[in-house]
Length: 261
Image 1 (cartoon, rainbow, N blue to C red):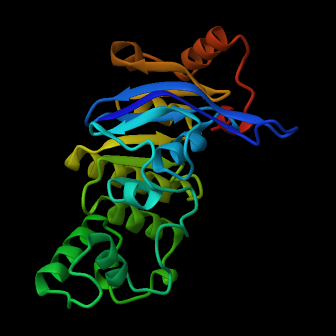
Image 2 (cartoon, rainbow, N blue to C red):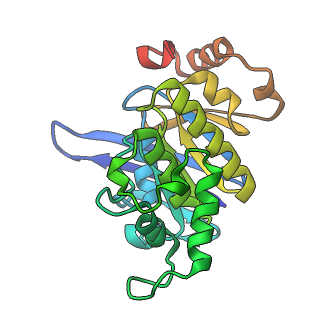
């Protein structure tokens, strides 16, 4: 489903601010894989997502999604097949438009000049009801009136209304309170499983990284340094993961945000 073949990216090459953000990254995901990614700030997690989404072109290597080479495909064309959620709940929706209008854009229901059908409206209400947040009764309200958790859940729904080839979740619950974050994660599990969407999720919570999905990656200095799955992952604890990181990289993880989560 997703294949990254030796992709690299260096920012500000040849200057004092030169930064090798991705270093010969190789990765292969099968259809339906749900992969969690952890790593310190600057490890390359969000840069990896930006490379896949097309926010910039990589310096070398190639990116294939569903067998199609998208290495040089424009970002807006990739977005038709790649869904993405960010840490900031304010991104991903149009706040001055209603919930219904946002869903119409996401669903591509007939375009701006075609009236919504009753079937469309019922589909929107049914899918909003699955979120269990009462949004189906607020469908005519502007999205800007929603809480952060409600907006993030709505964004997740919008990103998966037409199931994408690939879903990128970039710490999409980090800005939410614990109870709301758990609810959004529950919705995430259900939506991903129901539609069998191939998913990459960045998280700072190492326990969460071992419990969600079927595979865990650790990144450091622009490289994937650990790839844990199968039976090895089932019995792994956070302490085991930290020990494996130290053995592989030669130093301990020193990110307080991860260690305290």
